Length: 230
Image 1 (spheres, one colour):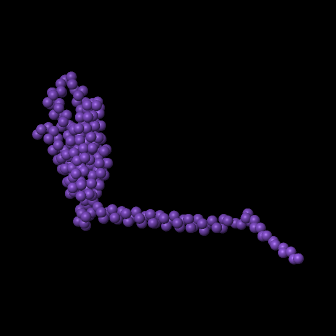
Image 2: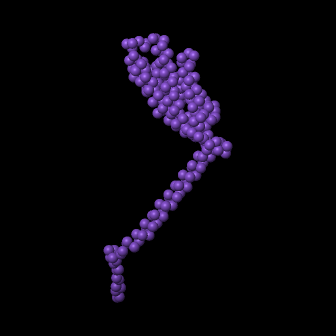
């Protein structure tokens, strides 16, 4: 009977130099990262190209946007418009109130301080919230005219409630309620009117400062004149 002798080869893993494989692994890892970065950059470039195409309806608009001397982005446009709405209409209302009630007597000058504080808060909240309102309006401007016009009064009323309620809150609950009501009325009228012209005058995401100033001041003064009863 024959006995087959078998030998088992045992390799000591400690004798294998794994470090010689490390450069290849690191090299492949670096190549993968570089490929991913290039792919990410390409996708970002394509997305930006598509965004630019959607901003301008034709090459004329693109040229006019490039020629703007003082372009204002959507956020800045509505922030500044909110600032003006927070200054002039409340100031007109307080002026009418103080004149009609003859409250500016020698012992009632503290009322003027309260009025100025309310006006300052309204302007600040209108400015800060205008940045977010601008993004909402920009989305509506990309929709149909019907949808935009139907949606803007609600956005404007909400904007006015936020700014008017915040500023009137320092005159306790009644002031917050009345400020919100006045702000809602102003916003529901002023924002749609401004946004219609903004949609017609904007080029891409911007409007020229020479168009913004007369438009924003004009609407603010119209609202103020209506409050004063002029």
